[in-house]
Length: 455
Ligand code: SF4
Image 1 (cartoon, rainbow, N blue to C red):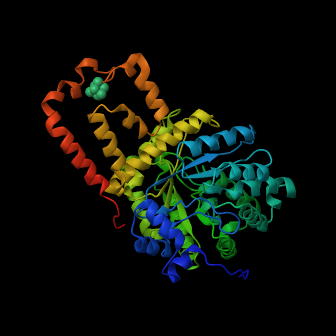
Image 2 (image 1 turned 30 degrees about the vertical axis):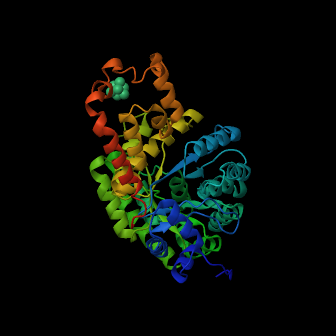
Image 3 (image 1 turned 90 degrees about the vertical axis):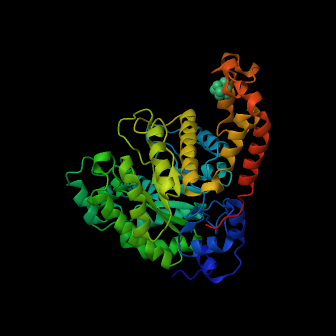
């Protein structure tokens, strides 16, 4: 061990009766404190927060908590515009992202990462250090085959020193799994960018995955900063026909074993999931993952429920994400309309984020029930009263809702331009007004009083 003394969150939750951060999270999430503490102690909930370098906002991810949404930003190797990525971060913050990941692969990667950390206003920041290790490793050592395995670890350390709160670590694509996938009949052998870099490195060097072979040391590093490991799904299905094959499930089994060791050592960990997958497989996927991993948080990238929604992948992804969240997935990675096509614009980042937030909330209405439903009831009550101000206030994108409300002269109406004077609420107003006010208020009270619920 590196000999650093500190009280990491899991250990704190295991050994103390009072953990200030968890008291705050319990209030924020309206959950029982003792239950939350048990979930953190057992690895079923995490808080991505690099405690040594900086303290991000308290965003808890895991069982019994609201589903969170991540936004990816980052330069590309062929289009480097760091300022554009910072604008995307602003949009992510404005429209309610819970976490941000910097996936940059072009330009000065250290500089870009640091500026994104500055710009994300305290939201937990994640990275994929494999990208930088591979890109800079090729430059520094001359070829993929010459990159020493320790270089992959050194780059992790660099990110931790900058204050990164969570990182995708592609540790479970073992040499056996990765090389077999490359020569398999899989339609798309590997679609993860980091996973393909690790596979290429293993193919060139003949060595075992550098994260897998040095897992103990990786755990020591994350333990020192109390940052969260997000175990990557390098072998996620890149098309629906590859879903739930031996490679996806084989990697999941390895990830579950690595997560178990991490939790035993007091390191916060979550596991990443698919990918492309038809609707009928999603609930089973979440259940298998939770069962194998003993309930560590599940971070899903989609799942995309069809391969054909090109230009609309944020919708294909939101459909899968809603089902995954309802079944127990804890963090959703947004997708934009530009997925599979190119680097997203600022507007596409916003569209993707709103779609993912709808999916997360739809999942929470099933997963958390009454605890998640207050905003829905407030909107419904306002809708029944034709109270546009309140409806717009609770809209996920109030500006867009307001602009649609105004089109065709709608803002001048008490109803809207869809039915105009034949609006059902206007037509039936005189018959229902005596009972309606009372029952709507009773309904609101019922949900407002939902308050604290056991997880
Ligand atoms: S006019 Fe039609 S669409 Fe608009 S609020 Fe009334 S019932 Fe709803």
